[in-house]
Length: 107
Length: 427
Image (cartoon, rainbow over all chains, first blue to last red; front, side, top):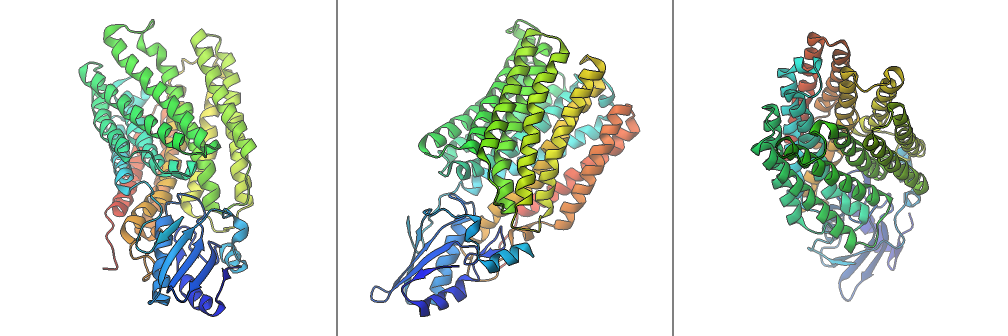
């Protein structure tokens, strides 16, 4: 797991919530699955931008996953507005799964 | 792609398009097994009889084709990585096929190839044309036409050739449109449907979905292209040989092409399985993988027919051949993949607005895994017993087999409609 950020302290708070956002097919959270690339916090604008991907473009569960991500961030930071920057560069592949995620899937 | 909070980013095919196909297919499977139960004796006769003709078309169109049409409206955007061109064309496809199939099946059950069969066949062809236009226009706007999409599009072309020929065959009974009588074209019609439509589509979608469900590191597009060319070449060789009316032993050539294609696909799936990250493989993926082994069964039967008998006249073996296809790999993969697709579609509809706010049920909780397991046991037993019944021409064995297949259909319907009517449990 290597998520870029401009605020390590807030990243930890965000991750607490995002670890609860599960990809229902894989049954693994989106952080360990490697879907979250970057979380940027803009204090003055009261805005958070989450740069993330999906396991495949037009993933049938994509809408649920991005909705859940927004809702989780709004629970963690109720005064801020969250936007999702969905990117497929680089595209997701299995090497992006964290060690903990790999262990979970192997178990 | 920026997504402001509160707006939906990814426009997948709406569940309203997809779910009716699943419901329709489930009911068709049930009706087909009821018809089998009521007409077990017809499987001891020549395969061209009214109940067998009706059951075959209920299984091929109502069951196999409807569920594949529904699933592919959802999955084609995943394959081409772009949205479906038109939901309305998908609705049209459902409505036209939904009316056309019972008309055709009922007419066949009455062994009447007149007005009702003709209208049914026209409606089914219009449904397929709507589907084909939707696929073509979706892939035209997408820049990502890959091997999986090629399988799907080619399968759709074979489908329209199959239903188009079927339409001509129905009209030929009354208007002599074709040079030969309609029975002469049964071979072409059946194989274009089985190999061209079902096999190509299942190979294309399966080669994308099964590695995804296994979370496998293995990829091999050149091998999948080989499978694509082998199966298509085999089918075209079969059509040419059948058209020229050549010696039946020459039919081993297309069978070998198609058999090698299936074997290569099997090796692809096996390598995906070996290199999977997810160790626990659920029952739905297992039965889908078992269906690949079942693909070889009709090929073995066909090789047996050709090499042992040098003739296609042994009707019980021809019947067994068709049975191992429709009730073998086609049914097996549908029984498995239904529960890897439908629960997610319905879960998305019911829970996407509240996902992340609380503990939502898992999609696999939307159906009963016990009922699923029972249905698979009933299916495997019914499949084998009914097959033995065809070989022995024994009505009692056939009836035991049909009871088990009917039980499979009842259990399958219970689970499918449990998913379709699932309500939000967190309200």
